[in-house]
Length: 90
Image (cartoon, rainbow, N blue to C red; front, side, top):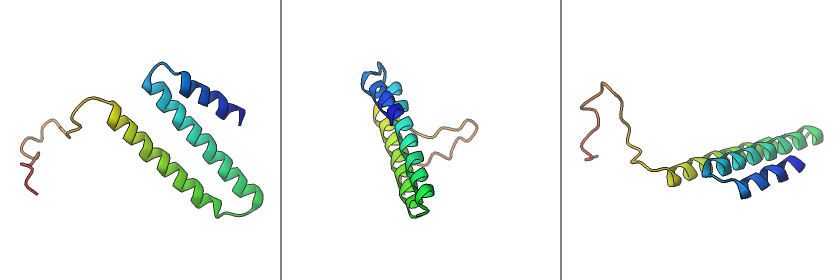
């Protein structure tokens, strides 16, 4: 719990967006480990499902943050595959 508070402080004070994003991912990982340890200690493995949902939400949230805060058009461009881009009529 102390490490989560230290990483939270880094998320608040981080000078760049990447520092904040990495801090949020670290907090997500630490909370997931706590949930899994709780499941192991209690012998109630229903908490594993909760941990997986928490990890997936953290992953989707990270992708959303990257999508919003990075410039660019996010178009797929593979060298050597001209003509496969499509014309947008689907």
